[in-house]
Image (tube, rainbow, N blue to C red; front, side):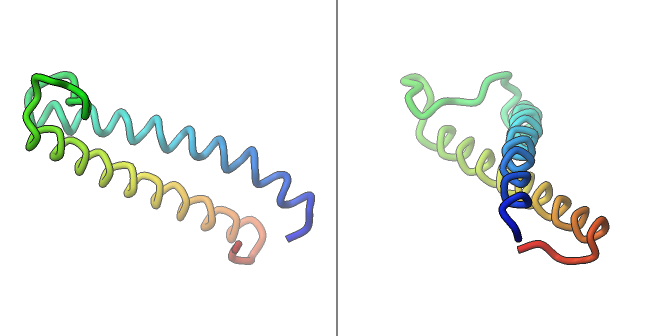
Length: 89
């Protein structure tokens, strides 16, 4: 990839990262409401929350963020392939 292509990839990557984070955050909030019936997931420093609840929330959040990121990344490279005919990377 040439320098112009690399320079164009940076803002697109940042935008896709922000988009992924927003989608994952919303999905996690909904998942937590279903799992625990509470609006707010526990933070690691919440004194009144038990370890099992904090670790469960962290595991679910991590899984959701990983799935959303992989989905957005894969969609991006598939779109590039459709537009250019080559697989990026």
